[in-house]
Length: 407
Image 1 (cartoon, rainbow, N blue to C red):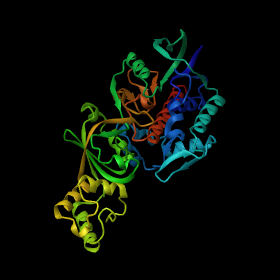
Image 2: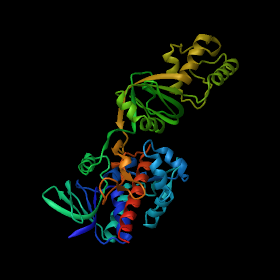
Image 3: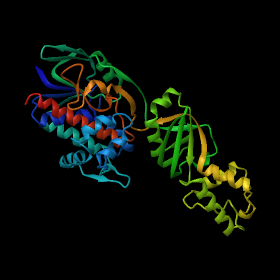
Image 4: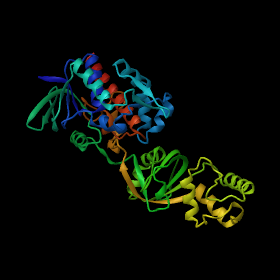
């Protein structure tokens, strides 16, 4: 028997592609998952809560969250974007909520409910899901393809949708079909630094402005930073790591990170300090700070790094020390020596070359009948929610396109 569609990979894009295809008219759809469990990345994402999309409604703003694939996603999101994904899950019985930062989670805060939604809909629609079915080889045959699966099983398919995420198996299969691969490198990770002055500030989060310099290639951003015991993390750092992923990799993760802890310019900081000094001359510098949003432990770390005495009063602060303090507060540079752990979604920058995909259909330009969706492509977002949105969108478009071949 030959199936209308065999999907390689039981992840987010694979399930969306399968459900879309079978509910729109395909008779036989099979998902082959190489491991013992489907939707594992959904399970662990968001600390087990699953940030499954974002509330960003303007497509022109939405695509700015993708370091690679922005141009291609512009067209795809015009067909199936965040609004459609939100409505799709709600219509399938999964209640969703939007948090203050725009991230969308199930109301239950459990990724298991997202998994149950997808697997239940797939099962009830007639999708056949087989785990421990690692695809070793794809051969072109008359009328479609023959897939050789570990254990010497084989499946015949009229169409194939490759949705293996960041796993090397999908890239290997794509290469065997004639595709070229953009070498995958890590994306979404924290930074490790040689500086130990902030070691006691681990766990602090605040909004900052940052500039990253990698051999004179510069990146900038603004947003929440998290001080860790080894360096820096948080949304603004993860975003920087995503956009600079290739340059950081090429430079062996060596870079300079300049942080403006106050989000103000030098003159504004000086004016605020001078005014505070004038009004609080008899108060101890360690106990009283002019910048209310700056956490006390962080303020003290700057004073200690400048060897300012703990009993020094504001009136006694020298001009030299004051200028050094201002520079540390608005343009302190930290040497980055490496990357910290991956973000929990284990995102990579790289994959099947976008030049070889027809983004109106998600079909290969190299081998007709072969489609791609999700992270196996050289597309990635700045957080898990944006990566999942790309999976829902590309899976949906691929599923629709395969159906249209037979209509």
